[in-house]
Every structure is written in structure tokens, then in C-alpha cells.
Amino acid sequence: MQPAPLNDRDPLPLSELAKGECGVVQALRDVESGAVGDIEGSTVVRRLLELGFVPGEALQVVATAWPSGDPMAVRVGAGVFALRRREARSVIVRRTPL
Image (cartoon, rainbow, N blue to C red; front, side):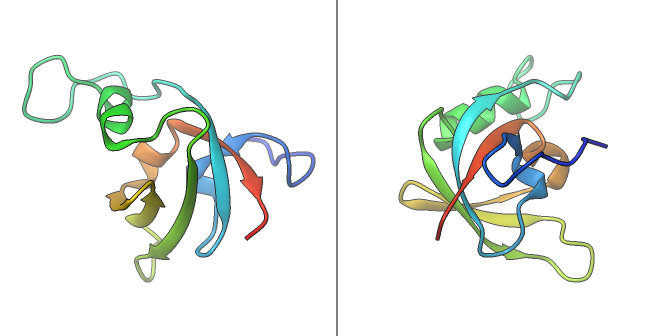
């Protein structure tokens, strides 16, 4: 588990944002060791980049599944994508006001 950020402006994993919170992508990191998707050798980070989770891009958590919060729906750019919490841990964000 990640240590809690010192304040609301410290970078944290996207998986830590609650429904309705906004942020800006700061970085992507590979926390998964295996390949995912249909193409051999693809990674979670590559998939996230292809979906638009690039540094500087604004995003908002628009929904979370009940009761576990997994998956979560995230608006980035013009799209809304469902991410598992383990995938969302690869996206480092900085909270922004609504």
C-alpha cells in the first residue's frame, strides 16, 4: 500500500482518487510484471498511453463499482474508460480542483 500523500497536491496513484475527484497525469509506471491484452508483450503502461493517459492530461473519476470500487470509470480527454484498481495504480496523478 502507498503511503498517504502529505497534502492534496502531492502525486499519488490514480487508484487513490474517489468518485468525482479530478487530477492531472504526472507519470506512468509499470507496476505489473506480466503482459496483458491481445498482443504478446503488451503492457498495462502501453495500453494506458494508447487510451490517452499521457503526462499533462486532465482526468476525472466519474464512477466506481459498488461495493468494492473496482473497476472505476475515468474520463480522460473525450473518452471514458473502465480501469481496474491495479491498472489505475500505474497512473501517477496530482489532484486538481473540480
